[in-house]
Image (cartoon, rainbow, N blue to C red):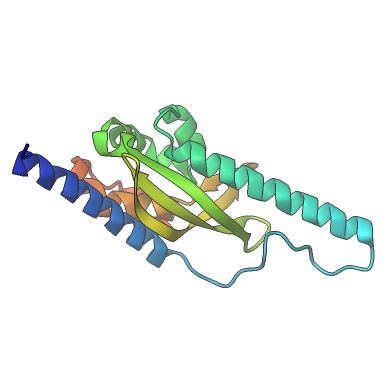
Amino acid sequence: MRSDPRVRRIYLASALGIVLVAATSACSSGGSSSSSTSAPATSASSSASSTATSSSSAVAAITSDWTKFFSSTTSNSERVNLLQNGSEFSTAITAFAKSPLASAVTSKVDSVTLTSSTTANVKYDLTAAGTTVASGQTGTAVLQDGTWKVGDDVFCGLLKEGASLIGIAVPAACSSAT
């Protein structure tokens, strides 16, 4: 049984858009990092233990919040709370969430590397409709208002590459995303 070529093109364009988004996200982040699992050397073992525990807590929070942000079951209001400067992107989040392409995308966090007490690099995979379309991409997470959030640069990268595919406008806030 042959499939309709137009349908195939739509799926291929969607997958290509996701791959381009992932590539953009990887290019938009950078910098050196320190390991998230090792504590700084100190003479007091309780201080080292406390630092390792807070690093582990941060890694767990980042992983959880990153996964929630990309889950199609997460409400738009929660996504706003899980994105750096999320209130500036609420309209774009709503438009993005309405796209069938967005509802088929999930993210799996491979690793988290804390770069400071308020920033981290996140290595992740993107999956569309059960197929990995980008593996080992790097994005940022930012501690803002006591919550680890997906960096607005990651979301803007997704929007810039996929806006035409999903028919939404890139918000002006993306011009200042770091």
